[in-house]
Image (cartoon, rainbow, N blue to C red; front, side, top):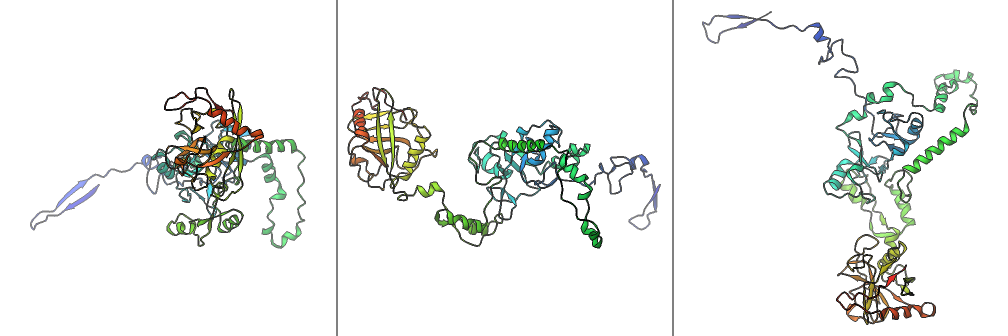
Length: 495
C-alpha cells in the first residue's frame, strides 16, 4: 500500500488522502530468462543474458585457426579460411567447420586482397582501408576483393558488369559476401559449429608437438634455474610419422591451390596485388621505360585520406605495349605473309612499317596470331582501285580491333602522306579515328585518300615475285557490278 497526499491549490481546501495498491514482482518473474535489467535474475545463463559479451572474429582471421591468414580462401557462403588449415580439416571431415554443411576442396574460392604501402588490406579502386565494420565482397570468377560500396556504385547502379581490376565479365551471382556489418552473427564465434562441439582443429603433427613435454618448458621464466636444465636435444623425426603421408598432404595442398586459380596467365605477384612503396617504384622505374608524366600519387594523397602519403613526384612507368606503340620508337621493319584459300591459290608478301603506324601493325599482327583472319573473305574488289577484307562477317560492317574498340588514325608517315603507289596496305574505316580489323590493298595510286587512311605496309617481292603476281590475279576477279562490288567468285584468306 502507498499513501498519496493531495493538498488543495487554494486556501480553505481540505487535505485528501488516497490509498493505492502497487503490484509486487514475483520470484519467478525476477528469475525468468526474459528478465531485462542490469541485475538480471538468477535463472538467466551467462550465454543468454542480454548483456553477454559478443565475441566477433576479425575479417582478416582464419575461421578455423582463429589467427591471421596468409593464403586466404573462402567457402561459397563467404567464410574465410587459410588454405593450409582448411585442407587437413576437409580431408578428415569433409564439412564446413563453421556451418557443418558439406564442403569440397574444389568449392573453395581463392581470394586476392590488395594492400597499401603499410600492408593494410584496401579496396583496389578507392584505396579505403578494410576494417571490421566494412562491407566486403569478392567476385567468384576473378577472386578479387572489393568494398561493397565500390561494387554498388560503379557496377550495380552503373550496370557495368565488368571487374574493375581485370575487366572480366561477371554477374550478380558471382558476388560473394565476406563480411556484412548488418549480419554480425555470421562472424559470431559462439555460433561456430566446431567450437560448440569442441572439435580439435590441430593436425596430428601439431597435436604431437603440443603434447611433447620438452617443447612446453618456458626457460625464460626459470631465472638462474634455467642453467640446471640440460639443453634440449635436437628434435628427431618421430618414428610413427609416415613420410609418404606428409608428402601426399603437401601435394594435395599444392594441387588444390592450382585448381583454385582461374584460367589465366600467372601474374608477377603470387598471392595478392599490392601497391608498391616509393623505393620499389624507383627501382621499377629504372628497369622499365618512364613516361613524361608523374604517377600522380603525391597529388592524390594530398587530397585523399584513403591513400598513403607520398612526398615525391616519381615518373610513371610505361607498359611494354604503350612503350612500343609510340611512333618512331621501333624503326625495324616487319614482314607478314597472306596465303589465299582455294580456288585462288597464292601468297602476298607484306612489308610492315611499325615506325610510322605502330598501332595498326600491332593490331594486324595480333589479330593474325589469334587466327582472326583465317578463312575470312575479301568482301569488296574494285579493279583499278583496291581489294578490301578483314571482316569475319563478310558484310563489310563487322570486325573489331585486338583491343575490342576502335583506335585512332596514324597518318603522319610518308606512305599515308602520299598514297602514290600500287600495293599499299591501309586500314579501312568509317571516318576519322574509327579503325577496327578491316584493311585494303591498293591497285594504283590513290591521292584522294591522303591522310584519310592509315597506311601500315606495302606489297613486296617474295619468292619469284609471287606477291605482285597474286595481286594481279586478284585484280582480274570480276565483281558483281552492284554498289558493294562483291567478287563473283569468293576469295578467302587461308591464314
